[in-house]
Amino acid sequence: MAPPKAVLFDIGGVVSPFQAIVNYEKENNIPDGWVNFAISRSAPDGHWHRLERGEIEIGKDFFTGFGHDLSDRAGWKDFCNRKPKAGQKRLKDVANPSQLGDPTSLKAETADSEPTDQDRGASSTSSHNRSSPSQPPSHASPRKTLKDLARANPSQLGDPVSLKAETANSSPTPDDRGAHRPPTTPASSPSSSTTPTPPLPTINAETLFWAMMSISRTPDPHIYPYVTYLASLTPRPFLLAALSNTITFPPAHPFNVPTSLSSTLRRLFDVFVASAEVGLRKPHREIYELALREMDRWDRERGGAGVRAADVLFLDDIGENLRTGREVGFRTLRVRLGASGEARRELERILGVRMEGEVKAKL
Image 1 (cartoon, rainbow, N blue to C red):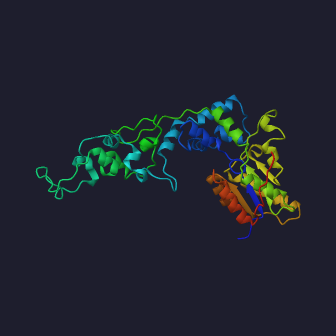
Image 2: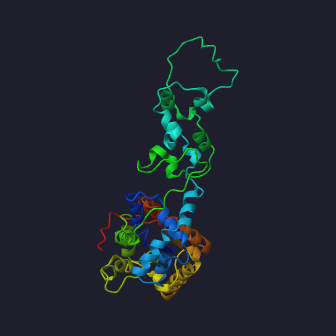
Image 3: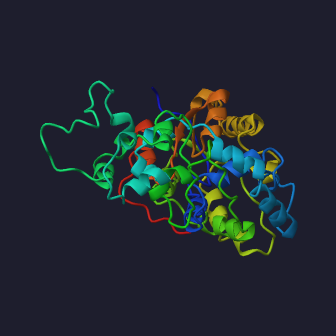
């Protein structure tokens, strides 16, 4: 396949990574993905979305509303009960009871008594193959205690909680993981037929927001130097464009001065479409079509034949954004968090342009 004519980059998450959400969730023992889930669920009129469309300003009202979006109890329940994504393990995939940590198995792991047929559960043989209680086995062997059996293979215990887990299609919750969860999390009740919804996490929306803004100003160590390198080539072999959901800071704010990363980034691109400036945001189709029109106009004004959707390679870190890009007709490349080095190597392969050495871009 021929190289694209234009390369369209997302900024937050690609050129500058959005690591702050991951960090905040880890530091505050919040299940991975809840913040992004809550933000996505509040679309299209959640406070984050309205901010990125330039409809509201950063201030007390925004932080109050954003905190409310992150504290949606119905959304939290849906998040805990959601179906697993492709490649995500289901509860039955991690059904080793010593990992699930249900009370029956954990108790067995410390028991010194001999295992009964009931304890053996799934591993106990049918009645005609078992020795009768009145007939001792013909060959004596060292008797294993219940905890010996549990340590050797907990799934042999066959307690109801674990056996049910082995057929469950739901995603494992923090309660299901038992021994693998942080010790402060209470174990689920063995008498409950369904796993109760864990407590809704408490999130300081203002603290999270400014952490996100601060870390997003750090350029990605792989993608950003490569964009800088492409922009330095004369003539430029590709039209370089950006399509990003952005936020407008107050005029006097340090993040809004000419020396900021956002201002430096703009000089690298021929076309820059920012959600807060156009009143649209990804993943809505209209902003993709706007970006395509701007790239086409830019190319025609310089004597080119224009840019079609099929001429564009679009990079983003969010699957939903990439899906709309493909619907418009763009080629796409996903930049996964923590794997931007792999994405850059693939981008170099697609474009046929390998960066010579490392470019130390100054911000």
